[in-house]
Image 1: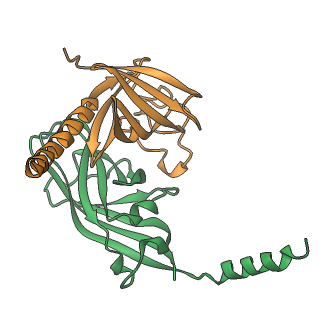
Image 2: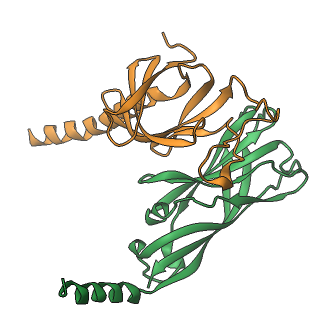
Length: 150
Length: 165
């Protein structure tokens, strides 16, 4: 009986991890924030999830007619980083129940970084909640998947 | 109140006695790649690096590290195209238990040169990355046009590590 239990456990653990990975990877894809100004591709690097801007409604700065850069970054030495390609979502890990935590979101419009939690409400919708300090004092934006999964 | 002064003086004295030293940590000839096909725009190139603190001193412990900064980062291309199909580079570091940090940028990338230098970021916090077993070097390459094959460059990096003796 003990042998059967041990064997069951051995086979169940890899399955559990595979399922966790598959579940967590539902976040991968291209997403659009509610303002429609950008599209963000979420990819996996190591065991964490990151989102970078792959499309901008207005890619050029109207003042210079050059591609927009991260002009509001508090670190002046990186203000010439282009916004197209900018990794605005960083370091998210899957915590179960369709939620990714421990990450940050960067707002290039004011150069601020906020703590962030991502909740998938259905296969094609994300609630992105940015906050300072405690989660209750934050703001949620709804992002939609670009290629809608049926 | 008077009793606190000798205690504070002792704390200040002990703190000033903790000596720090600075040494260089280098990563040489690391191959950074992105698997094709690749599309016009920013593409993520990666390399894994196992941190070897014995480079600083035999038996060096990670908790001795006080601060780390990037001194120099050079990227070399062996392709005849050099970097003529790259608009800009952004260099970042991340680890399983440390945040991703942007450590340098080169925008625009100069044409017709097989070797380019990434300009280090002034305020990158990468101390935690060096306290891990390994880290991932990420080079975001903004590609001009699509590319059917893989993209591969060689990187040399020099960091300055300040540590407690």
